[in-house]
Length: 639
Image (cartoon, rainbow, N blue to C red; front, side, top):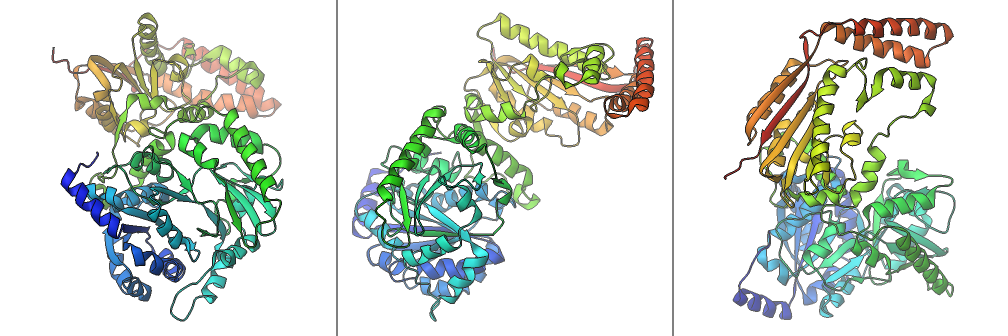
């Protein structure tokens, strides 16, 4: 949604902006530990003479605290907030409905969006400074922001460097003045970086071979013991003046804010730590599991960049930032040149960077955020900052490629071992199975249904299919993941996002493995709008015979289909008899013994396995437990 404003309002706001530009400092912080650290170090550093006091001389500043409703009273009692009021007004905005433990980046993005949204169309007439609760800011950084505002810059980006909080925080606390202000000149602040660098800071340093981190969003080059060069693909939006007013966002803030709020504006990256210095305090072992040793770095970095890099990321990485605790060394130009060549070489080896809308990091992140929301937040509905409309074409975003290739299960091969080869020969592997396959009663009708879809796809060059299924199942070998006219997504995504018909599809196929997780009703409601009028929808409900199935799951799935907004509904039932159930469980037990047991146990298991296979050949088909359902329907056709 884009806010609109009248010409008169714009002119009036522009005149106010010429006199004293309004600056909103957005701070997302909640929780006892973060508030305590933020009060002592974050707010303390903001109050140094060349930060907030200097900015307030020429700008109308307002602090917007994005926090829990119950924590507003606590903020009001903080001594430093009283000092803040000498230079700026203070506002609080509750974000209780946005906070989900373990998904900080989604919460932070939505919180910053809310901090802007509250100003409506007028947001295009003000500057926003974004603040992370872990930041300590060097003295003079907000003076540089004031200079950027005076120069008319609308996009000001600044990188942050990380230090070990357990080591640096006590040192910084001891430097706080009696008035509670932390006066930290940039070079003095950066001494901590070179003495107490965080593990991830080291792991992302290119000209060292000790360790590496798989995610190269920030890269560093050591120049000397007091100087490093940094190139950020993903960087902090330090200050923006939106050129268009939005009420909802479609990507993480370090992906989307610049192109969404300031499309086409020149990007200015602060290139020297003397101008803006952001020190980020991180726990000693934070992200330690992402650090690797030995070979493989270059391939891992290229694969990672290929997966998520956007045009803005590529542009930003071409702008170097120099962090230094002393004078600039004479070898700096050589390192700047090396770092530029490294970035260009990486960009040449990856795909063409794709725009951020539809990026799978955001799509899955929001889906996970939805699942983990507490009941009280769910009761409030979806936050207005989050648009859950997803064009079908988005499912072709290049960022999905690596994830799908990595998670899709490949078909087996004879090299897996003689026992495995024999089992495949006797039982087959979906979608090519024999009647001796333990789950044949359930799988065969579903495979036949999927093959019918594939036939329609092959016969009609205009036919388009939306496939909803977890990755790695047999259906990916019938309906190919990378097929040009197959749009592929997973139940987690389809149960969260409302798919819009851009383009509309002729057929939707949902492969649903029955279980306690549910979600079929939401999936049906979300995918139905993507169908063309009269388009076909099929739900292949699979209840594996070797798993315990609660009858309530089947009843719930049938109810989901009954209430779906579709017409011409049909149901076909498929059952597995008691003998088939015993056979499936026995087969699983004996097959494992054949593959992994000792010589004697293998012989015994092979004999029993042969008996089970012979027994199933003599079984009569009898009704028993539900093994599968096939639901079919059509989208409403007004004609």
